[in-house]
Amino acid sequence: MALLYMVVFVAAVGGFRPKVDGVPFATFIAPGLIMMQVLGNAFSNSSSSLLQAKMNGLIGDFLTPPLSPGELVAGFALGALTRGLAVGAVAALAVFPFAHIGFAHVWAIAYFGVGAALIMGLLGCMAAIWSEKFDHIAAVTNFVVTPMTFLSGTFYSTTRLAEPLHTISHYNPFFYLIAGFRYGFTGRMDGSLEIGMALTAALVVLLWAGVWRMFATGYKLKT
Image (spheres, rainbow, N blue to C red):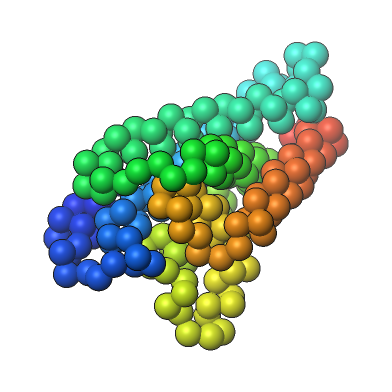
């Protein structure tokens, strides 16, 4: 999917696009495309694992062993993290030949990449526990995850948006994940780096606590 986006936006129309925030168009959108794969696959990993177990009556396989709620959260979150980063790495190999980008701040790539995968993995857990069928997961994906991703500045710089759209875009947490991840490659940050780092850490903590609470109380897991 990331390679198809690069072909459409870079090979087909990239030559007609001006630089964005001082960097070539391909270089600008490549980190966003990689992050989209991290976000989507981390969410899919945890949500599909939990919901399939619920639908097939196998949720007891998770709840019966002597595992604490914290250990269950860690297992699902780290599984989602692993898949998100693995697919993100493969996507990077696919798009790098088109983008020719460097590594300005490796720590930012790691911080926002890991943070994004954990956030989406934990969000996937919450969505799966809440859902009663796959249509519910699809609704979360189609009406929450996808719009927030595409409206986060993946294919454009939010500095070019007129008010109030520019201000509204900064309330989208995905904006900071993608902008911070892009900062790691280009050295240019669209928005506040400090706010992005703090928001990423806060979301991980809050979502971790929320999923822990769901497991601890057996919300929609125990009959």
